[in-house]
Length: 117
Image (tube, rainbow, N blue to C red):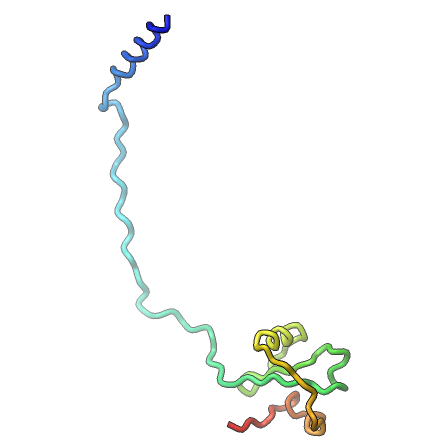
């Protein structure tokens, strides 16, 4: 019985020819490497100067807004989390300034501090 099954399987497999196998068309050629005519636009602005200044204690109520961030002469409207992220990213350590009279007049948080270059 086993011999008959093996013989029938052999005949079945031998009767198949390669003509019966489906032939697929050749794969299409890959697309050409298309490069843009111009370079991509620069979305990062050219920053010339950044100032990060502490706010004096009467104006920094409960540490809600500890720093004022100035970029190219304009103060950025930031909340405390954003300003703390910038301070941590730049690895800045702040110490309480000795002369607070200039700070209380607004230097560094109402207008830019003068920078000697």
